[in-house]
Image (spheres, one colour):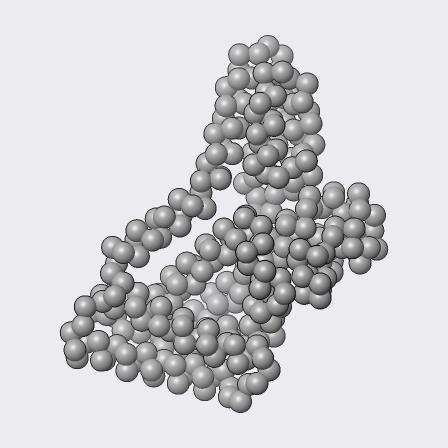
Length: 289
């Protein structure tokens, strides 16, 4: 990520936290960065894209750090404890991503941001599953989803205390305490031979629906681009237009597509009557003016 993009993200997040996402304008973000509104658009096409880039940057940093704890020679419980302690400490020092005006306005969060957060929620569930299975082994598989859900619930409850700056315990002590409670839960489930609330099949169905929900928009855009390429194949002298579409495809494959570049490539196609409907629909789906 370029230094200017980082600056924009940092200044925008301050405004989102102070004023709320909805109340913050692109002009205010540009002014906070000491640049013209038009210059900001060369990096991000909307404040929604800035928010999404900020969240991606945050989650990528967390994921990279969590992976670093998986070193050879450490017991699974020790690794999982260190990972959870890191999560708690990181959240405590980055409260703006967890409990601020921005994410409290969940009803008004842009759709693509909401989809991103949903995928991260299920990635976190998978992270808990991996850690718990490493500790308890394959025989715990019937109860892993329930244990992961209960661990998540306990962690979130204590996170609220951390966020409110009322921390009266260390993250290491809290994690040790919570994993002991998970031990108790697992032993109780096994002793009583209770039927799991969330089976592997149930979670698979939920996960499948989530993936379909998130992928629906991506597939729709891919189909539009495919239709444009097919249409151009019937039009002579369309090499330049095909090149523009190729650039769009490359941008969409990036973690952080440069939407001003995509917008510029689409403007190259405006004069082609056969692509008029495709271009209009693509702009609508990607929220490009």
